[in-house]
Length: 288
Ligand SMILES: [Fe+2]
Ligand SMILES: [Fe+2]
Image 1 (tube, rainbow, N blue to C red):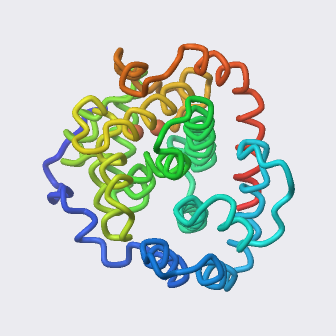
Image 2 (image 1 turned 180 degrees about the horizontal axis):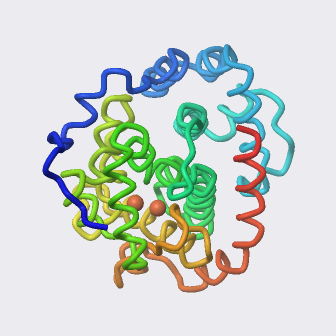
């Protein structure tokens, strides 16, 4: 199939052009603002999140999953905020909302179920590496993992034809190639995802990580989080959970262990746990 750009408009500012791009629910916008307010209390944040029962249920489900390693069951959002911290609960709320926003539509070439399984597995892998390696970015690890490819689902929804053409090109080459997106859409899922994160008012480290996850070596101020997202992305892809079937993502950079100051044993442990991580991710996406 020949990719033509002859009739395309410039899609590089897609996020600005899309007026009906979902904005975050008001509850999440308030939660994001509150989590950055030094005067806000755990009760304030919990009160905002509890307005949405589905969101509350999902947050409790994730908080109590084996991968947070808590010794007792958390039954209220307020307890979750106290134990996990403001930014971790805010991150979970953002991730759950993003999953709820983009569940519609389906194509045989870009399957949303594959996409969310990859994103959720990446979130759990990033979180687990962060915990085992005691990384200083653990609060944002889960969200960076679940949102790193969010631009793909935006492209699929708002530039569907062009995105599918790019995916078909990559499928022929059996690897994810941002160049194919750039040639077809004049932008990339990483760039669109970063713009969406900015529009949603997500913290700067997350926006940068989404934008740099395919070039984490060049990530400006937050190289560790970008490296972690790239590593989790690769681990999932190598273990048969790519975001698009039959397309592998490129390996993480060779200096990933030194940037993350990570012992090789951490990767071996995560590799051993991968079947359980995948099962947990399958359960989480079923409940959305
Ligand atoms: Fe990606
Ligand atoms: Fe990915």
